[in-house]
Image (cartoon, rainbow, N blue to C red):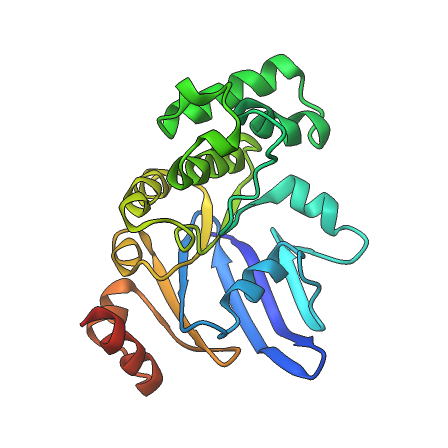
Length: 243
């Protein structure tokens, strides 16, 4: 399996704050990678650097073998990756359907007819076809996040990045979003997901990485991770959240 994402010697500073410290990471095409760790460990910054929403201070990001640069990052994002955010990031002045067809029409130059067909199929998959004409504020948080996932599916890109997609949701809405993500994981999409949902990691991940203080301290299969982690910091973290 070829590498879809490769990160080499990545460092990110915000002023004097060293948020990512010499990160090296590869993600294979079709792999489901789950990133866990305490708040402030650099997880979200890492995936934002993959999509170049944050520009690395030093180091390189390659997508499908191509170096992402200041010059080509928009084109690369357009071609390869879409992101699902914590706060949904839906346009409040557009209907659900409008939110889903915007990028395919504007960025990918699809016809309105084709974009609408794709959008309705995506809404069907997340169980919200009947909400196509609604505005985001009329939906629950769980429904808004399912719309955001459907929007990511509409661009048909090979990579979807998830930045703590359930952290802004009420507890009873979390499972409806995870169910959609679990179904999506059966497809040949490369998924990188920052999450605190350990059951999701156990069900979906091919590999789990644990970050703390801007570094990757442990990585392995879910079996290794949840039964036999080696790093003391990782053991301590898992003990706190699993018991």
